[in-house]
Length: 493
Image 1 (cartoon, one colour):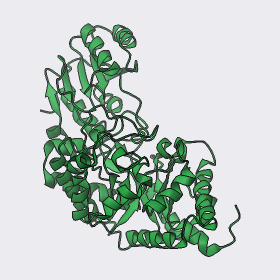
Image 2 (cartoon, one colour; image 1 turned 120 degrees about the vertical axis):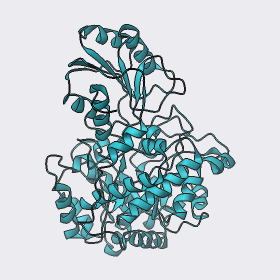
Image 3 (cartoon, helix red, strand yellow; image 1 turned 60 degrees about the horizontal axis):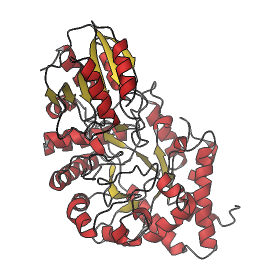
Image 4 (cartoon, one colour; image 1 turned 120 degrees about the horizontal axis):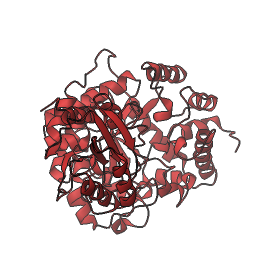
């Protein structure tokens, strides 16, 4: 589609927030920034992990094109990080902070995450997660949540926002109206929240109200259907988004990524973008092009949504006034962000928080130097998108390791356990054993053969723990792996 009205193009670009491929600024992105693009969202492929200063230089290059752009990143601590995707996060995760239940610790973690983001040039942190985990089998939230108690999640959401925004970044709390009771990952399909709206308001909305009262600057929508509120997912549902405004929230409503299957495979990303704006969303997160295609996918995704908005205006479906109001909100979001680059906060207290959070059951020290690691974990969700395993890396500092990945298959797990020498210690890495299923079966099969195996559970703890020595770690971050290594080698108590 040709763009004949540069003013309209700027109005459309002002509400778009794409991802991009590579560690340098592609030419299409530079042109879009010149034409008023709101900013970018960083993903792992944008970060050169071998060059600590590269993210800050990339941010400076982007701001050299447009000084007031928004740069966002998923920096939750625990399992979810983009800036440390190839190293693992040095910050405690939400579930760990919720377990410790020390608001000062959560506030400090938020400030450390915010300071690290700001040092990389990121001024919008896509967090905290305000979802209440009331469904243990939830495939996408789990330990990303502070917990299963509405009151606990509410107070820690507020504390995390205070820490993040005190560091000079905007917090974007997610995923409204609450993703914690779903059985489906919205990256892969369209989930349903099969609760009455009164139950949603009682259990799942209070953490978002706490966020609003804490002064959160942005709220991210969820691609979930709440049947009580109609058939459209929350991102595209004016009834759901108006309920957010009824809390007194005056900040910016941000969509979850429009390239996720919950939108892309139902209404389509382009029509979804139009419907989201008409429903009350203001900043359209386009998503991670690396999840969808190869070279050139970033430009394809951007043009698909940009052109859909231009066509909707031309057809009279989308009013210019809607774009103007949304763009004004996005501009307010970016106002006044930032702080002194020297105002950094170390994550030095992270290990003590993690150690206080994890639960150790049975004899977990491994006197053997040789160690077999059996990894039965599920493939990471696209929300986590981890690039490596911190546990294997950290355990290699203390043990001679052999790492096998039988996955959640009992027969493959038995075969892998047999292949490990009798004189070696065995560690089983798991992350979905809170509910019955293939992964728990695999763990039980291994323990039946190697009774001295230690199960390191990076996911939610099971209501009824298995009869094995284990560590409920509540995250798979770098700092968690370091604490687990010390426990297994007898280096910490």
